[in-house]
Length: 232
Ligand SMILES: [Zn+2]
Image: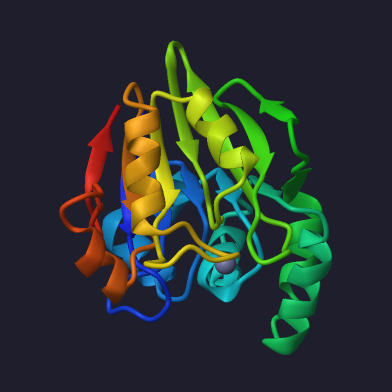
């Protein structure tokens, strides 16, 4: 599995917010600025999946630009997201004065709704969803399975049972490490360092970094950087 880190930071940094491109065809989150980053790295006709972990703008804000581009070739897409995604998209299209995207989405986009413990599988991917704890929002991480490789993405989360479930079911994990102090929205650098000690069989990469967490965690966490390519 090829993981391209499109963005490695959180909103309040100079880096693009956390987002990934998997095997050049599966987009994981679409934060502000992601459209130009994607355009600079790949041809959008290759994108067949968009995963939206939750609806905060630093994970969702530029999906309409991806859809606009895909509409030009009537590209079929699968959008994997928490419930209510289609309703939110249509509201977004109204706000941005792009109602022509409604018919494209209705005709060419398939929606997969996440549920805790549910597995989605097709001829290309198998992934299982985990409901994370992110300030009370609906937010989902997942584990991809490819042969004997299992790769976990936490999306945004604080410490919770699902974080442990992800790590018990993965060889490699990408964990939210935005915080310095434990809180109800994000994992802290010390929590992630402790998780790495608890699960030495898992290679944990830190994502969603902040200026403070990069500074405090630089010697105890394995932070990724924008445009880094990780082959697993
Ligand atoms: Zn968030």
